[in-house]
Length: 179
Image (cartoon, rainbow, N blue to C red; front, side):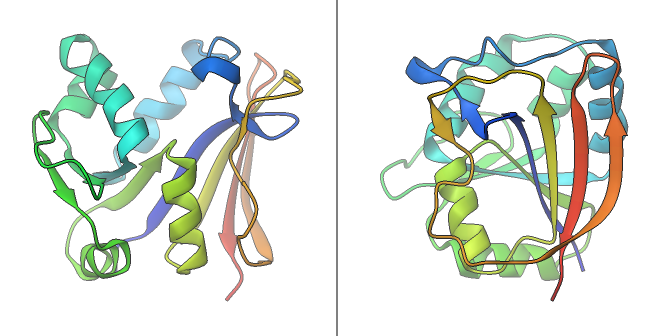
């Protein structure tokens, strides 16, 4: 069975996006890039909510490098009630989150990753479809913005799987829900 893995960068105070879609606080350096390239090997599918998908689809098709090759080549599923044409290589649109993700999890292949997409991630958490949380805590306090965990998610105990501190001050935590 494939795992659904939420992977997101957040600030110390829990924001994953600053006001006005500000991502300038995000610490990206060589060690984080190596971690991303290493863990991408596990992924076969990416899931997105529409807003994050549109930001990704506006950037990655013209980007270059190993991460861009990965992003442009992998299967992508965007969940939207309004979008009909995803307009990006290897992408499709779905609207039934629980059914589609359950079918994907039962399929063959590598894991299923979710990047960003806080509203969509909340839906996955509420439906108990998340198998692992990977959270990169950045050494910054924003004070305002969009929180990754917005509230309304059920209380859930997590088991620590891995801690990876980076020289930049980013700390990557891997957790699994205790079921």
